Amino acid sequence: MTVLHFLYRMELKYEKHIGRCYFTIKCLPREDDRQHVLNTELFVLPKTTYSFGEDSFGNRQIYGCEHEDHNLFVFQISGDVEILQTDYEEKNRQEVTGLFQVPHGKCIPGGELLNYFHSLDFKECETSFQVCEKLMHGLHQDFSYVPGTTDVNTTAEEAWKQGKGVCQDYAHIYVTLLRLAGIPARYVCGLIIGEGASHAWAEALIDGFWVPFDPTNDCLVWDHYIKLGHGRDAADCAINRGLMWNGGAQSQDISVLVEKREQ
Image (cartoon, rainbow, N blue to C red; front, top):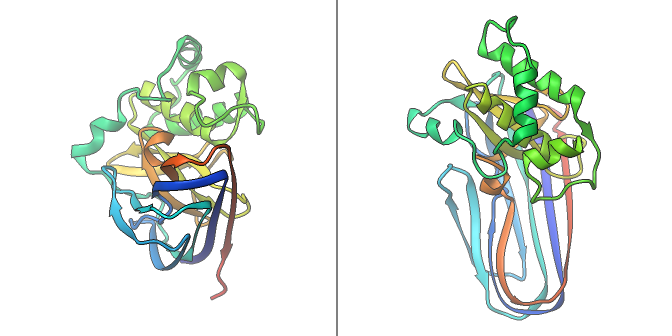
């Protein structure tokens, strides 16, 4: 058993004062078979009332509205998460499996991703787990991690054509390839020790369990990862979404800290 302490802080600065702002933030760790939330502490500026809820994927979220003029919005959450000794995230719920079987959003394959998939030889793979490993190792070898070459709107096909991207692109491509292989897959957003920002990976449905893989680092997800949410692609579990009036240009500063608690 491992206990991880985390801190996520986001500051949004606006060129002009905002008269009204609606916000939804998905930055509360999930409760499942691999992790248990021990405690959390929230800070929101301007001080406003907010509510807790879940989206259609079971991702925990905070939402609210600020009506007072402001040109700075700060959200900070910290807490402790207990990581349990299991090699899967949770058991599957049959009623949602279909959502993660078909191409969707940023995980729709184009010609080049289809050609890549059909060039692979799976004859030596006897299990779905081995297919997942082969795809992960191959993607890690054939795609390069280069920050600044893609953005939040880049699709799996677009990133693959460039041959480079960041963790979001690795996860989108991996999810796309898994679905082509007939393995239901979902995109995951979370935190990891040593990143300084949010991270992305994927989960594959294997023998009734959702098993997490990190194609960016070419490894399974172990005890230094904290899961925040999952969905069909990154849009389903975006950490921050909002609707505002006025404000002009804005800048965003995000800092993340994850470290092991001494026991």
